[in-house]
Image (cartoon, rainbow, N blue to C red; front, side):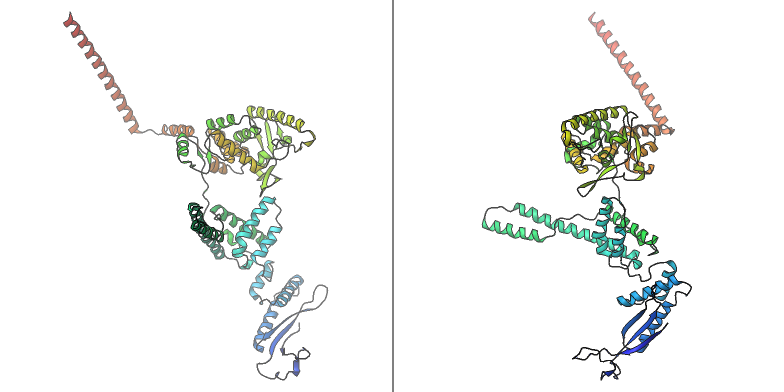
Length: 536
């Protein structure tokens, strides 16, 4: 294909504004003109012509080097590969039109062979936008991805080319997030100190009013209180990026996922602890919970259920406490999937929050679709609840909202999961029991099933876990009496000589004590006899 270098003068006539070209009086000067190149490209599919053009070279040698570069790129696709020819031509046309640097020949050869984009100018931010737009998941999941991308990924690595993203770039990002946490904590401390100082300044007096005004202005100029980006959030940011890059690999845009290899601080999930008497006593003194995840004993659970027996949503509290449903699953459970005659319900839906909005969705995971067996007492509770709901429906008449759900508001409409949590916390506080979260009722149900020697697989299926390891790692809080029984049973399996000797010593000590007691009793008897003889 035709291609050439040529000399060009860009000077213009001051009157007409047209280029002077060969009539420029300075054209013959050695360093006056610049050099340009033009290379004919394969025609478009419709037969129209196109070319690669670039100018501004200071000498013919530099112009010829770029022309050779363009021709080398054109030579990557053979004549018997019309698709490859078109791809290379489109790439060169784009590079020419956007004035981009000429891509490396060997890198282009590799991309062409792998079926990847040849230009490689796609940035991380552009890819994340494209990836997010193509996701077909529930709205709350999209919102979480969008937050990770907007708050963390775009500001730190959005400007980088997707194909040149490296593990070191991600390490720098997470280091910057950690440094930002330190700055947030410092700014929060400064603002808190200023607010506390403001509270100590009296209102009366001109001097005090001036101090208060100046301090308020200083507080207004400070950054607002902010939350730090904790380990769990950092892990989620990493997971979001890793998922998006995996899809980029699937579309043959890149070949390496750096997010799969970057190391960040692991998340230490809090262990569930049981509210023993000692922990309750300390909580009453200090108001501090031993762990974010606390579980009631069977007696405490029973006391709570007795306390809320008259609550309109008692059946919900009972169901979560006994069968371990998630909050959203309980809120979204339909009567059509609740078979009280067969003592079972099938979890097929849930209500979830997106911000403060509520939407209906499928269960959290595939294993969330499950059949949950119901005991006689729970069936009785649900039957009484259904009768009360029928009475409510008749009372509301035409204003009743027929959602078909087991647990609803007074008019039959959806429960708001966030308001359910708030109600539960108020009921717990009013009961005087040590605090737990609503989700901790689920922990308690799992713990009770495990304490009752229910097979771990049945417990896992009841809770809707995909793996029994999840059940063991998260929900197996050992109740005190269960742990004591296990310890005693284990101790009896090990024969100890020391133990036998101790038991023998105990037996000897008991015999000596018995002998001494007999001797003492005999001595008392003799003494009484002597006193009686003297009196006689």
